[in-house]
Amino acid sequence: MTPISTLSYQGTPVRLRGTMLNLTDMWRAAGRPEDRRPADWLALEETTRFRAYADTHWTELDEPVAPDAGLAGIWTIDTDGLVAVAGGHGGGTWAHWQLALPYARHLSPAFHLWCNTTVRAAMERPAPQAAADPDPLLPHLAQHFRDLHRRFDTIDRHAADLMFLALSGQELVLGQRREFSALSRTILTRVAAAEPYGGQCPCCARARVLAEDSRPMPGAEFDHFFHRGLNRPEHGWLVCAACHGELTHGGYLVRFARTPEFRAFQALVLERRRRARSGAGGQPR
Ligand SMILES: [Zn+2]
Image (cartoon, rainbow, N blue to C red; front, side, top):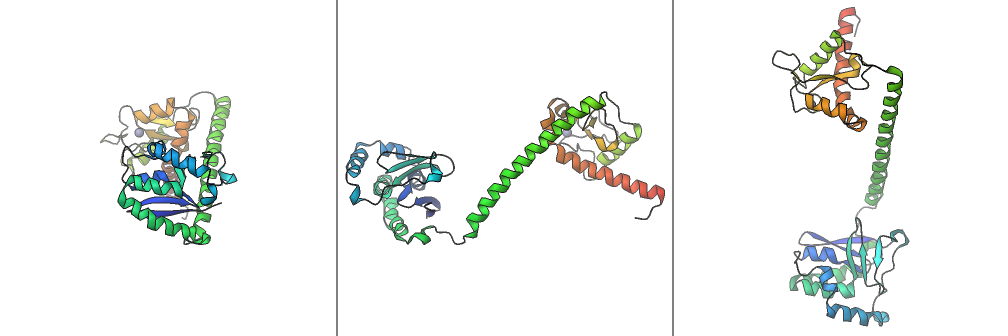
């Protein structure tokens, strides 16, 4: 695959790929003149005439663009091979330098001058250097990161699916609602009162769940995180009215999205109970 190298005009990147230049980049680099977009210029009669002529005189030009197999479907190549329109990340209009340099002239004299020197020099560089990549490890790492991101997305979807299945199973097995006991409420309230929450909602961190006297605010709720039938301290938290509404009516995906906050809250519940146990039983720590 022909590597893409990136030149820079006053800080704006201009991509070059083999004999093709990115016209969209050039347009941006030249200050985005409203009436001189690549499409405007390609529609000009002068441009059409040049393309028609070039089409019948290929031997005088460099090789026309050969779309890489891997990019099939992304590139839409015009029949003469002089212009390619690409979607997605490498997007924009690409054109053979025979066409791109007149476009540079059309954009501005200063930009044209820069293209004539810099672009030609870049194209005349031997192929391996044209990659313009100081470290071959970078594209390799980039690919691995893309793969990892895809995997994380998949894992996330699987976890959400598992949560849905667990909820459905609980619904069948557990049935009815069980309120949190007074002791459970006390534990959840104390965790919400302590650092880092200091009485703020552990779910959204925006509204208060505890009043000045450390009692739950009106509207704050002891939310059954997993199922309304599971009422141990490790199954709940104290959240504000807005969060409780969202968690109750938003479906399991809303709940899934709040799992990290719930886990953080529960880590503190666990810590508190562990300390209480070792204190009461006099067990060595
Ligand atoms: Zn909240």
